[in-house]
Length: 333
Ligand code: MG
Image 1 (cartoon, rainbow, N blue to C red):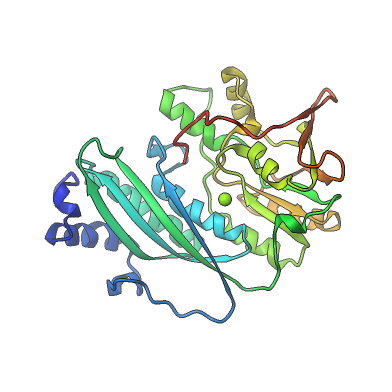
Image 2: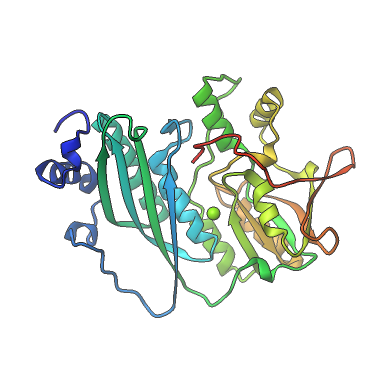
């Protein structure tokens, strides 16, 4: 095995087979993938499936709290889970730049295997392409995910009504600050780690509790501000700054860098909009889970200010939180 990925590894010939066998199958193999068919054929029960796709171009590919492989699995899993589905199958396409170290590729693939196992999903199909030096930046990963809905509940922004409570599953901004600090070589008093995590088991518990959940969304690129604005189409939203969970190190970093935590990306956080009478139930399920220990109710849906996200500051002033207009931090995921 060469120590670097070469154009021949993407040729479809002997070298490709060797890379697939020695790296991908070694860690990701399972009864479906091992068949090496042109597509994965899977038995499913009657009912609904959820399908999603995502691409991962994060820079740097290794960062505190994760790597591009972990991100690819967790990001795909979370998109399925917030739709109320149980994530089951993932496909992944790798676009690799010639010269990429095989050892780094192995670390990434091993990480994908670890997090796929943790999230109880199988990688059932994959593809590898190698492009010449300068035509990509190290490695890009594209995934598709399939999940199964085991219930007939329907979640959606159209289910939201005034009085519903808005819960966030934990501290915000950790992922963005972790990436930024690694990229720019910034040092803070303590290492800030990405919150990248698979949330499916926790969210399944929320759904199975019978709580009247109206809508869920993972709070990723563009941060809480973006996600809440996406929700505030036909309703108003009022958030209390005081209840926004932000860790001390992230708070410190944002003050230093002049950033607002509500605009920062996360990779292991979700907002849950729930009927007020079920707020405590959902909050308790989240708090009992390692990925939701810092969950808080941050606000509610209002009849007033339709289409707007309002934030009541610690000083008691209300300001509008707009959708970000520019991409401040490209290649965050
Ligand atoms: Mg999403």
